[in-house]
Image (cartoon, rainbow, N blue to C red):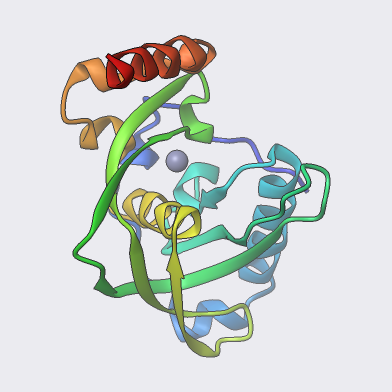
Length: 180
Ligand code: ZN
Protein backbone atom coordinates (compact mmCIF):
# COMPACT_ATOMS: atom_id res chain seq x y z
CA UNK A 1 0.00 0.00 0.00
CA UNK A 2 1.29 3.43 -0.92
CA UNK A 3 1.63 5.58 2.22
CA UNK A 4 0.87 9.30 2.69
CA UNK A 5 4.00 11.43 3.03
CA UNK A 6 4.38 13.78 6.00
CA UNK A 7 4.78 17.34 4.74
CA UNK A 8 6.99 20.06 6.23
CA UNK A 9 5.39 21.18 9.49
CA UNK A 10 4.35 17.70 10.63
CA UNK A 11 5.95 17.20 14.08
CA UNK A 12 7.02 13.63 13.22
CA UNK A 13 9.63 15.07 10.82
CA UNK A 14 11.33 16.83 13.76
CA UNK A 15 11.51 13.88 16.17
CA UNK A 16 14.56 11.70 16.78
CA UNK A 17 13.36 8.29 15.59
CA UNK A 18 13.70 5.22 17.81
CA UNK A 19 15.82 2.12 17.13
CA UNK A 20 14.11 -0.94 15.70
CA UNK A 21 14.20 -3.74 18.28
CA UNK A 22 14.78 -7.45 17.66
CA UNK A 23 11.11 -8.06 18.53
CA UNK A 24 9.97 -5.44 15.98
CA UNK A 25 11.71 -7.33 13.19
CA UNK A 26 9.52 -10.39 13.40
CA UNK A 27 6.20 -8.56 13.65
CA UNK A 28 3.90 -8.55 10.59
CA UNK A 29 3.39 -4.80 11.15
CA UNK A 30 7.09 -4.05 10.72
CA UNK A 31 7.45 -6.26 7.65
CA UNK A 32 4.36 -4.55 6.20
CA UNK A 33 5.90 -1.12 6.89
CA UNK A 34 8.97 -2.13 4.88
CA UNK A 35 6.87 -3.35 1.94
CA UNK A 36 4.74 -0.20 2.03
CA UNK A 37 7.79 2.08 2.22
CA UNK A 38 9.33 0.33 -0.79
CA UNK A 39 6.11 0.70 -2.77
CA UNK A 40 5.88 4.37 -1.79
CA UNK A 41 9.45 5.34 -2.72
CA UNK A 42 9.18 3.45 -6.02
CA UNK A 43 5.90 5.07 -6.97
CA UNK A 44 7.14 8.56 -6.00
CA UNK A 45 10.43 7.87 -7.87
CA UNK A 46 12.24 9.35 -4.88
CA UNK A 47 15.97 8.96 -4.32
CA UNK A 48 15.11 7.77 -0.84
CA UNK A 49 12.46 7.68 1.86
CA UNK A 50 12.83 7.66 5.64
CA UNK A 51 10.24 6.12 7.99
CA UNK A 52 9.45 9.44 9.75
CA UNK A 53 8.30 10.69 6.33
CA UNK A 54 5.51 8.11 6.43
CA UNK A 55 4.62 8.93 10.07
CA UNK A 56 6.64 6.00 11.52
CA UNK A 57 9.23 7.35 13.96
CA UNK A 58 11.64 4.42 13.56
CA UNK A 59 15.25 4.25 12.37
CA UNK A 60 14.59 2.89 8.88
CA UNK A 61 15.12 4.32 5.42
CA UNK A 62 15.21 3.24 1.80
CA UNK A 63 17.82 4.70 -0.53
CA UNK A 64 18.86 4.35 -4.15
CA UNK A 65 22.20 2.57 -4.13
CA UNK A 66 22.62 2.10 -7.87
CA UNK A 67 22.06 4.61 -10.58
CA UNK A 68 20.74 3.87 -14.00
CA UNK A 69 21.55 5.90 -17.11
CA UNK A 70 18.12 5.30 -18.57
CA UNK A 71 15.29 7.11 -16.86
CA UNK A 72 12.75 4.32 -17.16
CA UNK A 73 15.11 1.51 -16.16
CA UNK A 74 14.28 -0.15 -12.83
CA UNK A 75 15.96 1.61 -9.94
CA UNK A 76 17.62 -0.31 -7.16
CA UNK A 77 16.63 0.61 -3.60
CA UNK A 78 18.04 -0.88 -0.44
CA UNK A 79 16.66 -0.77 3.06
CA UNK A 80 18.79 0.49 5.96
CA UNK A 81 17.59 -0.42 9.45
CA UNK A 82 19.27 1.09 12.55
CA UNK A 83 21.96 2.55 10.27
CA UNK A 84 25.24 3.96 11.57
CA UNK A 85 27.54 6.10 9.47
CA UNK A 86 30.90 4.70 10.57
CA UNK A 87 33.24 6.63 8.26
CA UNK A 88 33.08 9.61 5.92
CA UNK A 89 35.45 11.08 3.35
CA UNK A 90 37.16 14.32 4.23
CA UNK A 91 36.22 15.65 0.82
CA UNK A 92 32.82 17.32 0.58
CA UNK A 93 30.69 18.68 -2.25
CA UNK A 94 27.77 21.07 -2.61
CA UNK A 95 24.67 19.81 -4.39
CA UNK A 96 20.99 20.69 -4.82
CA UNK A 97 18.70 18.30 -2.93
CA UNK A 98 14.97 17.79 -3.11
CA UNK A 99 12.81 16.13 -0.47
CA UNK A 100 9.46 14.34 -0.78
CA UNK A 101 8.29 16.21 2.34
CA UNK A 102 8.63 19.56 0.54
CA UNK A 103 8.98 18.69 -3.13
CA UNK A 104 8.48 22.33 -4.20
CA UNK A 105 11.91 23.31 -2.83
CA UNK A 106 15.54 22.54 -3.56
CA UNK A 107 18.28 23.24 -1.04
CA UNK A 108 22.02 23.54 -1.65
CA UNK A 109 23.65 21.19 0.87
CA UNK A 110 27.29 20.27 1.51
CA UNK A 111 27.80 16.51 1.98
CA UNK A 112 30.71 14.11 2.29
CA UNK A 113 31.64 12.59 -1.07
CA UNK A 114 31.80 9.06 0.33
CA UNK A 115 30.38 7.24 3.34
CA UNK A 116 30.68 3.83 4.97
CA UNK A 117 27.40 2.70 6.53
CA UNK A 118 26.57 -0.21 8.77
CA UNK A 119 22.90 -1.26 8.81
CA UNK A 120 20.56 -4.23 9.10
CA UNK A 121 18.60 -5.40 6.07
CA UNK A 122 15.00 -6.67 6.04
CA UNK A 123 16.19 -10.15 7.11
CA UNK A 124 17.98 -8.75 10.14
CA UNK A 125 21.45 -9.26 8.68
CA UNK A 126 24.08 -6.63 9.54
CA UNK A 127 25.92 -5.33 6.48
CA UNK A 128 28.58 -2.72 5.77
CA UNK A 129 28.14 -0.71 2.59
CA UNK A 130 30.45 1.85 1.02
CA UNK A 131 28.96 4.43 -1.30
CA UNK A 132 30.17 7.52 -3.07
CA UNK A 133 28.76 10.25 -5.28
CA UNK A 134 24.98 10.63 -5.49
CA UNK A 135 24.09 7.51 -3.43
CA UNK A 136 26.37 8.77 -0.61
CA UNK A 137 24.48 12.09 -0.69
CA UNK A 138 21.15 10.25 -0.49
CA UNK A 139 22.32 8.22 2.52
CA UNK A 140 23.32 11.38 4.41
CA UNK A 141 19.99 13.05 3.54
CA UNK A 142 17.95 10.06 4.72
CA UNK A 143 20.09 9.57 7.83
CA UNK A 144 19.38 13.18 8.80
CA UNK A 145 15.64 12.43 8.66
CA UNK A 146 16.12 9.86 11.47
CA UNK A 147 17.46 12.65 13.68
CA UNK A 148 14.75 15.14 12.76
CA UNK A 149 17.13 17.17 10.57
CA UNK A 150 15.98 18.56 7.21
CA UNK A 151 17.94 20.01 4.27
CA UNK A 152 16.70 23.52 5.11
CA UNK A 153 18.63 23.23 8.42
CA UNK A 154 21.81 22.51 6.46
CA UNK A 155 21.59 25.46 4.07
CA UNK A 156 24.58 27.77 4.62
CA UNK A 157 22.30 30.69 3.79
CA UNK A 158 18.60 31.16 3.12
CA UNK A 159 19.75 32.11 -0.40
CA UNK A 160 20.53 28.43 -0.89
CA UNK A 161 16.82 27.57 -0.78
CA UNK A 162 14.97 27.84 -4.11
CA UNK A 163 11.77 26.75 -5.82
CA UNK A 164 12.47 23.49 -7.66
CA UNK A 165 10.87 24.94 -10.78
CA UNK A 166 13.58 27.65 -10.98
CA UNK A 167 16.65 25.37 -10.92
CA UNK A 168 17.49 25.98 -14.59
CA UNK A 169 17.74 29.75 -14.03
CA UNK A 170 20.03 29.19 -11.04
CA UNK A 171 22.31 26.86 -13.00
CA UNK A 172 22.45 29.28 -15.94
CA UNK A 173 23.42 32.10 -13.58
CA UNK A 174 26.16 29.92 -12.02
CA UNK A 175 27.53 29.12 -15.47
CA UNK A 176 27.59 32.79 -16.46
CA UNK A 177 29.42 33.68 -13.25
CA UNK A 178 32.04 30.95 -13.57
CA UNK A 179 32.61 31.88 -17.24
CA UNK A 180 33.20 35.56 -16.49
ZN1 ZN B 1 13.95 14.17 2.57
